[in-house]
Image (tube, rainbow, N blue to C red; front, side):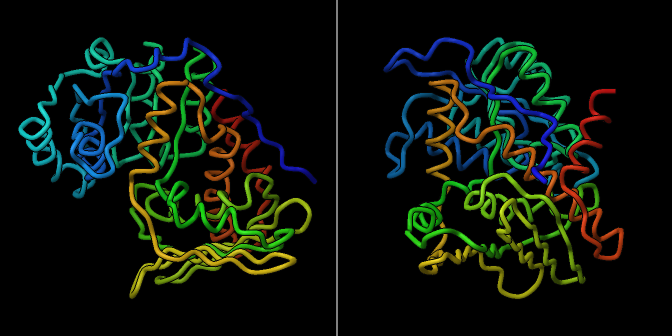
Length: 329
């Protein structure tokens, strides 16, 4: 049975490509994550060894979530740093931000407000990158992509793991037909999000980077320290996520093929992701299709459902259908 993906769209077909050499004015939403400093440094500092040209972060909206300590406690510090080191202007509303920029990076560490924060950006017609997790639920992720399709606005979301040079090396290694993949990584929990959304999204994204969409069933084994989530893909391929919460927390992908095995060596940096974001803003062509992002989040919600059912197999297409029905009521 092939997965039924309720939301199939290719945002990014609208709008003109940015004139070569033009510097884009970029805006940030959500100053509660270190990503806003790391990304702005790469974009605004031409002396940085990994500098990404093509734009400049010029304005930002603070955001922040009062019920998540790691969000609200960091907003003022990161705001001050952006103002003093990079001259970023702080605005009071997202609508005002959109009037001052050409494209937006939605960085709020909390996925729950992403839908509400994305709406004015999409309605303003601004290309939008949404940092992980794209939303606080699969239902909201579908709503974001539906709205983007309605307004013909390009949107994409991704973990930085997808674009790590070390993972790119694994992906291009010739192993023959892929039979199974193991993705290992941190999976810390945050009580306001589905279990894997907060940090398990990283190794989940890495798993899908190799296997792509096509997962049919999901089974989860969960203990306080570890999650093991196994997906079966069309054609019998198996993808396994090992999510870790204590002790050493490596991130590693191992690919088993008909002719060999490829293993990720080392980690990576934010620079490849930021290069993809800038290219996306310039061309309006998302490097990750909506179909794949939605399936990643359906995989993680199916893992939660399997846990609720005591480790029983869960149909990913059923999870997608249910969430799409809820999103479109």
